[in-house]
Image 1 (cartoon, rainbow, N blue to C red):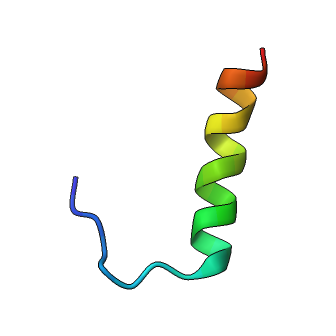
Image 2: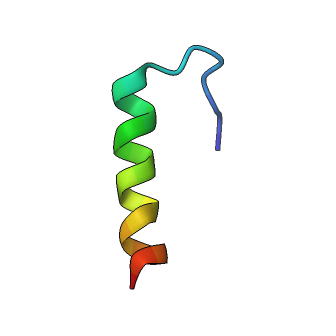
Image 3: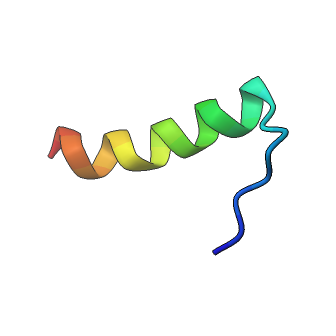
Amino acid sequence: KVIKQKLSVEDIAQWFEKHAEKVKR
């Protein structure tokens, strides 16, 4: 996976939400 050095706040929020669902459980 290639991580972009320039991450927008929206990108991080979306990524966080995706993982939050898995961690929330």
